[in-house]
Amino acid sequence: MEIPGILSIAIFLPLISAVIVAVFLNGKTARGFALGASTVELMITGYIFIAHKQYDMSEKLTTWFPESFPVQYFLAIDGISAPLILLTGLLGIVSIFASWNVSERTKEHFMWLLALQGAVVGVFTSMDFLLFFLFWELELIPMFFLISIWGTGRKEYSAMKFLIFTILGSAFMLIGILVIFAGTGTFDMMKISELMPTANLIMPIGILFLFMSIGFAVKLPVFPFHTWLPDAHTDAPTAASVMLAGVLLKMGGYGLLRVSAGMFPDQLEKYAWLLALFGVINIIYGAAITIRQTDLKRLIAYSSVSHMGFVLLGLSAVGGGITSLAMTGAALQMFTHGTITGLLFLTIGFIYERTHTRHIPDLGGLARRMPIFTVSLVVAGLASLGLPGTSGFVAEVTIFVGAFPAFKIATIIAAFGVVLTAGYILWMIQRSMFGPEKPQFEQIGDATAVQVIPIGILIISIIAVGIYPAFVSDVFADGIAQMLIMTGAN
Image 1 (cartoon, rainbow, N blue to C red):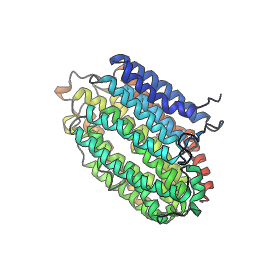
Image 2: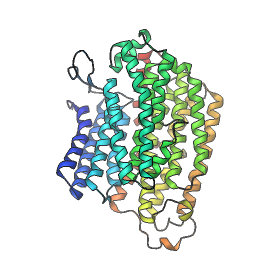
Image 3: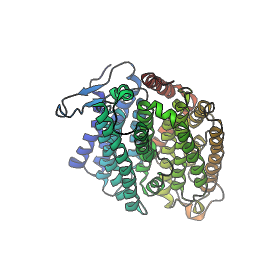
Image 4: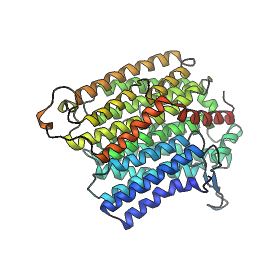
């Protein structure tokens, strides 16, 4: 059944729900309402994912701005954005469960979580560049407050660092958007892809490509723009870490796919070696730094830097003119990393609520006291290191197979990153959950019924995609194939 305006509903349901929570509700009522809203949002994003091929879900309002300033309210969906919208809905409800025990300024916390979800869906559905940029910036506000109010440690410093880095990256992107508009006369992202080859740009196209890519690279993040991420993750509350790792980083990867690859295919091919180089640096450097971490959240944060390097490696292979296989792997890596890392941060957050420490040497012997959390951490860890049968394995293998013909040495070096990942993941699990029991944790409890629900949701998604990856990968492949046809790329 076709539902008119479904994309607008997916954006504004959480945004309007956030307003209702802020104005009319409080305490447990706000929590229950937020759970209901996020449940409906998950159903809507699931419908969009399943039905986007059958119906034309695009929405366009050309009279939104004065005619002299051609900004459109233009929403659309394809195989590139549909899985990421589903991921946003999935992690949105997980973040609500992760915040179930928040007692400080409760309604504000759920308000910002809902607003964040709506803004991210707006990014993935916007086909007008200025509308895209509006939602891109709107996402900063909820995340800033989530970190600075409900975080721990140097939360104000980490929130401000996150804001400064991402705004600086956005400045490069805004310059690029305005240059593109000056050369094409439109903000319509679909028309821009067709007009770019003949556009009269006031900036060399290579510099324009780099400006746009830098804006996305900061969000991904790519070395050396990555330093905001470990601080933000370490000091963020659990729900914010889940959303930050799960979908906010994917905005950077989505931008590289949609804009850098979709609008600048020739430049992507020209700078393919640079993407491969930074991809390898991200993978190896991120993994090497991860091994040295003793804080559980900081360890997983640096591992995200490493895993996002695989996205760059996949993009570089397509830029090298091979096939869309590696790009499909890069897109799949974004989806699978969202569920895997989301589960890692979720589990670590729940463990921290009970132990009040994330310092690995202070932990140990928790497996008998926390069997559910132990299973959750082991499943997420094994998926992160790419165990066959999990979603992490499928994504990485697809990237390696697609990238090897283009950059053999880079792919071989990147594959060594899997070995380093196995090292720090297994070390982390062994040190924190196994070994002799410690007396201070004798009375500690395991997961509650409320906490089992989000853990189960993410474990099922990880195993399901690992066993039947075509459910997601085929959707990505279709969207990428259409994009490559439009750009005339191989």
